[in-house]
Length: 473
Image 1: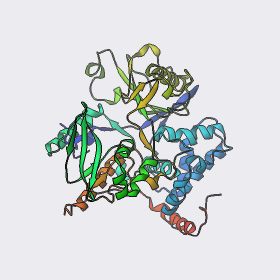
Image 2: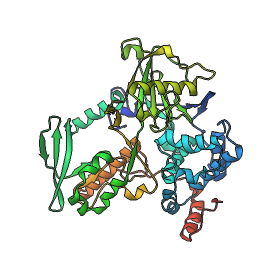
Image 3: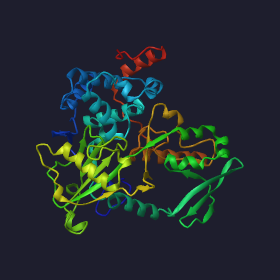
Image 4: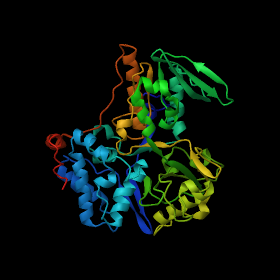
């Protein structure tokens, strides 16, 4: 982001990120809680201090038995001290629900620590999702929150100070065009033509149905997996059978809706999590975080607040219409989301008022036909064992490369960080394939603190000997 110029910013687009220091946790029919998102700089993060920090971080959850919270912290400590061999050889093939031993635990444990933490962060179902993926993102968030990681000196939680297009995408497009990149819009890839051991061309179709053949030296298939799979025909799969694994990958929905309000709410600034809400809602007040006067810059002048909400569970019945989001109309979705938000945030606060709603906007990627909801923008869900089916940036076809959230990465989650890493890996693969002497783009591994290395070495020996983790009791 620092490399993308932005008027008045010495660090380019990076300076459009602003720090968020707190978050609101909402519970149904219970007063919400404001909590800091940063633990603060610890002198040294030992396994014992980590366990105590996790207990402290989640101790505010109502009706959660202390012994179950302690068990959750112990399981997280087991992840932090698990070797790479165990993470990929065992955790990858267990669900988060299994690792957290949800059976027999209290409703609060299952609702908040097993279900809500996965649904609101990665739209993942705990009974399907790889425990390795959930552990990876959990570790990254915990370590970022400690204040120990120099790369997070700007804060573990940062958001853009204006709409994403204005703050980032439009300057990025302008910068790339200045570097000679050409954007061709309104074209859909319909076929990769394979011959003579290479991709010879790609067929693209415009909105009117006219097809054209495009020839290039290298082809980067940087599309979501559900758009990529139809292009992998029999000749391509014969050339690299491993690519057939992409057919086994699953996607799920995580879609946004914005409520435009006539008056600002009194909700504290920062991310908002409606923990345990049926549709796994998270939200953010955008107006107070954006530069300039919101009412004069956006809308018809009467809107003072944009309350942006993510819906991460589209398969669980709601509290108003008692149907999953996929079975609701757009208006019913808006009504249901607002009803859940009020139940989770309004107790003792009255933050959300019906009379303040000016209008709302649901992500246009969701559409309806024949009474069935469709989503053009699902995201990859890292199900148990799915890592085995995911491609790398390069494949057996020498001039075909892949990018996207389904490509293997250190981040291992559908995020902007993994998109960045995926692009770097594709660029490096092209450099290698072209025998170009240019230096590689750096690819950054996740932070691993030295305090856990000794325990990981012991666990690696135990895993190779077929023994369980020392804490797996």
